[in-house]
Amino acid sequence: MKFVSLMAAACMAVTATGAFAQAPEKTKITLGVGGKALLYYLPLTIAERKGFFKEQGLDVEIQDFAGGARSLQALVGGSIDVVTGAYEHTIRMQAKGQDIRAVIELGRFPAIAVAVKKDRKYNGPADFKGMKIGVTAPGSSTNMLMNFVLAQAGLSPSDASFIGIGSAQSALAAMQKGEIDAVSHLEPVLSFLERAGEVRVVIDTRTEEGTRALFGGSNPAAVLYAKKSFIDANPNTMQALTNAFYKTLQWLKTATPEEIANTVPPEYLLGDRELYMLSAKNSKASYSLTGVLEPSGMQSTADMLTRFDPELKGANVDLSKTFDDRFVKKAQAK
Image 1 (cartoon, one colour):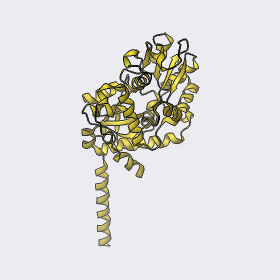
Image 2: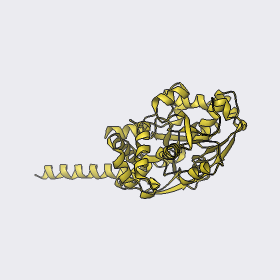
Image 3: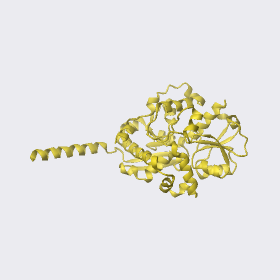
Image 4: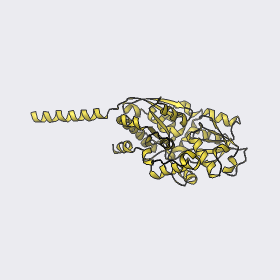
């Protein structure tokens, strides 16, 4: 009996030690995002609203910026800990000598569509020359995709004017007031503009077919990324964040548009629940199924950036350093 008691005590000690080792080093996290209400970042809102962060012992404060470029700036400046943003930012920062890495893929397609105001002539990408194009924020993924589109038509970013219009209501207002000729944006803005009869979509990466038509392959979108120094100092915290997002991706696989609409804050519906549900349906295919960035998608993104960015044409970026797969693999194994 004494032996059994000693063994039980030893097992309890090992269990306690294991649990302690997995406790997040930093429980209060500041997370940056550029346009949280957009369906591009739906996994973040679901993780927050479903309590998945709290389940992992985390208190996540979300700072919402006008666009992804702003959240990246905040990360580099040290005012936030992690970012949900476009994967391409990791490549750009690696090229600048700043070691920023993704830990889980949230979106497998960009889910960005380019739409032109109905009264504007458009026969092909060359017609974007001279247009005022609305994007979430200059330098954000919506801007980068348009730069790629322009490059394919033999144009440069300077051949068009890019205007930061934020998300949701501000984007709708900019189009309706005639401040822009075209828009490179995300759901639910696109479905709202389409139903209002304001625009016609000419490029669409909300689907796998549209993504492959533009890029010739896959092209990952939103990820969770952080500085390598933060990841190294807080591996348990990063694992907890990854666990929460991975659980979110599994929830999204079976969630209906109605369940999604029931989960997000009421203001995200923009006063039209049915249209928001349509937007959620249109975005469903874009979310990652596994959380893993595929090498082909990473290369596709790098190829896209080098098409229009002179700074990246001569850069030697090791793409394996843009994604740390340890955390998502552990999340999958649970």
